[in-house]
Length: 220
Image (cartoon, rainbow, N blue to C red; front, side):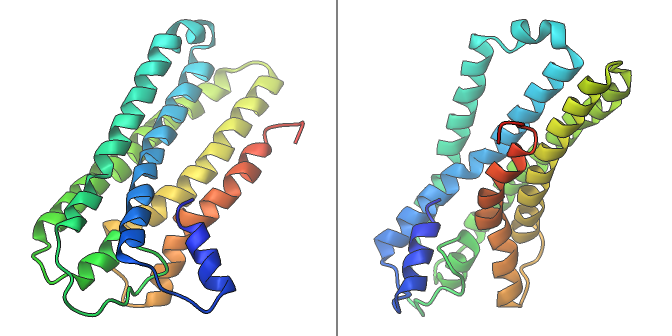
């Protein structure tokens, strides 16, 4: 959400510049929603409990559990924003043209004339923990759900379970796979390719979320 206003402004006007403070602010608010990965994992766990243990759902997902999960998400969001602090300590003494459409860590590291080894290690640790870890936990939850669906006797119950899982898996795939490709795989040399992949998890997923989730809502 922090990317779209700046992008719209650059599209509607001829100016394609951003101040140093604006760049760091954009990076900060972009890194906080990294906890969206943990939110996806939490949603998968919620679906797992609802489908596999429907009679125990209210007892398992009680108010205390929801508050604890929300606290974990917020704590990870604030911890993930520490990347902005590490970027602020860096020195930029070369060209100031970002080869990207917004302020993201890899393009900023490419412009730095300070040692970036620690930043790269922090980035890989965070990505492996959040992206790969959460994606694995999400897949495990939906693996149990898929295994449990054949045991649902009512056809309507199977349809609802499949609808809920399919819509969530579409959003998860559109978000996780580009993130893993962008941050963990070697950076593509083609600028257009990198921007297209980045747009998938920054713009496309945000736009498609309401549409995909509305598939399971008959009132939409």
